[in-house]
Amino acid sequence: MKIGLFIPCYIDAFYPNAGIATLELLEKLGQDVEYPTEQTCCGQPMANSGCNRDAASAEALFVKLFAKYDAIVMPSGSCTHHVRDNFDAIPQTDEVRHVRENTFELVEFLHDVLKVDNFPWAEFPHKVGLHNSCGTLRALRTASMSELGEPFFSKPMDLLSKVKGISFAHPKRPDECCGFGGTFSVTEEAVSAKMGVDKVTDHHKAGAEYIVSADTSCMMHQQGCAERAGVPIRFIHIAEILNGARE
Image (cartoon, rainbow, N blue to C red; front, side):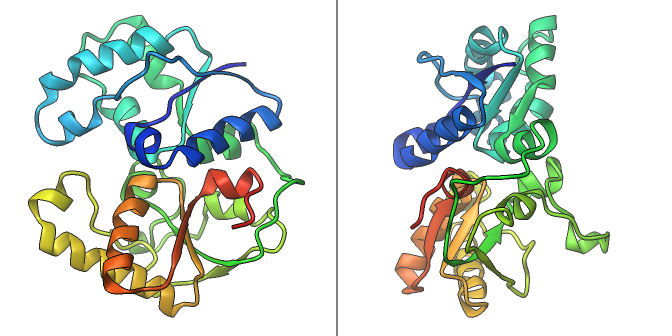
């Protein structure tokens, strides 16, 4: 299939290695990938702030650039959730519907579409704590929700378990929000920061050397909280580990 790669604004600006790893990983898996260079934002920040009409131009450009692809893949659960479930600031044409129905977060694309069962180049000899963002957990359903008491499953953990040398830390409250929440971290700064410190401390007490996530936005928030609170823990996007990063 022909894949269009979308790299979210904050990854492009602050964590480019996660975007590069996503491209390299998909190519290692034999996929035909293109990166439309005119891409900007998917419109999520405006829509999440209640300014849905202001997202229309960004959404229209997204559709113009990505409608020709069989699948659109991005290393971000929150952006995937926006495109798939809330992409409604523009008229719902056939092209828009195609884009919405064929947009995938990287983990679910690897797990559900490609069904990857081996990463022979990957080795990560560290203990990691897995952070599932609220969007990937509760909207995309890439893992079970502990508050529902449902049988356990975890697509990101399934993939990471195929990496040599990796081990997992198990925090006491694995599904608790880290406090980022997009603009919530701006409008409710004190609450957000306390939630972030609680989150990284929980992982650190469980023995995690790294916190790994499919959402760099949450990791960006947690990294800032950890640095300010003096919690000695590192952060890495799941794409980097699956692509072969060692540290």
